[in-house]
Image (cartoon, rainbow, N blue to C red; front, side, top):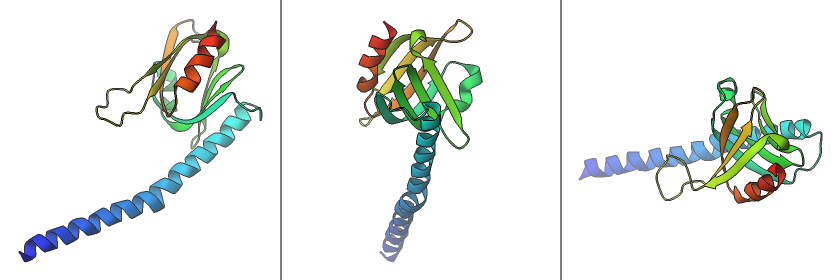
Length: 153
């Protein structure tokens, strides 16, 4: 019986350690990442207020040259198009509104489970004339899809 209590005690200590690391290490790191991304976004939009602004995670992009864009950042919709900015290192994706082909909302990607994050999928004509697609995890993709459809028309 003593072995059971020792195992339970070790599991409890491990659980508390994981929670403390998540709260005191990972959370501040994510907050710094988003603040730096917001500053980068402000530079890219020249201080203008975007129509829609949200924290987002770039899940996938079809352009091989932009694979370094994957990760957490800020997604904004401006009157000129879509801007995604991620910091540390600084990287941005700017999609002009005239190049947007489609904007769709999906319930989540390949990740299974109840708490799937809704996704925003944007297709556009890239500089080379080919169609490119990017997928973002964001809390409210519907806030982006309707205005993007209006902008693309």
